[in-house]
Image 1: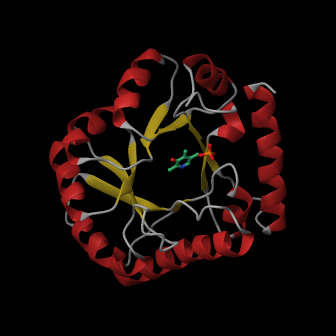
Image 2: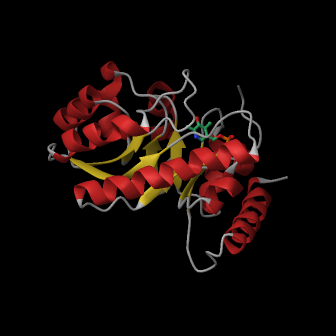
Image 3: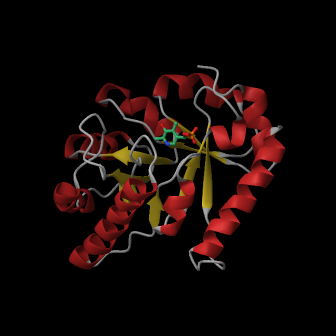
Length: 224
Ligand SMILES: *Cc1c(COP(=O)(O)O)cnc(C)c1O
């Protein structure tokens, strides 16, 4: 299958899931996850409308982003080490993986212009996962709201693996509930719920996702 064909199929599946969720008239932002994907496939994606792109690693992004000259924007979706912040703030429009106060402060200090961010939440309780726990998220929101160069737009999570309907939906519902609670507690709007990947995006849509991060479902298998 070509990238173009995969994108068409993905959009059909997204529309079916939206219909099942009773969300026919809503739109969903697709982030094309390009880790391990070569430049020609990324370009074919952009030519077919996937122009918001997600990378996991700053080093790979530093090599790749300058090679793409078509208009697009980049999001960091993987863990950010503090010594890489100075590069990340120049490469990315959004950092989806903010999960601690020190990191937020460093991004606030180094970013040349206001940085869009999401807070990454660990919704599955899996210890190997990054993300702040739902219980500690309020504390992090409070600090971020005091950092003038950060624009907090919502929450992100990585669903449990292996994918299982019940467990996946429970984790995604927890992200939505955490968002609703934080909006009330702080009187703010957190419009973005970034959740759902190739194997679990249908469950994420049923639980309210409005930003999906799709790699293999768009580009095919990764080169690593
Ligand atoms: C790799 C990755 C994705 C996309 O994975 P696919 O299964 O290829 O869709 C999404 N989000 C994060 C954080 C990832 O690391």
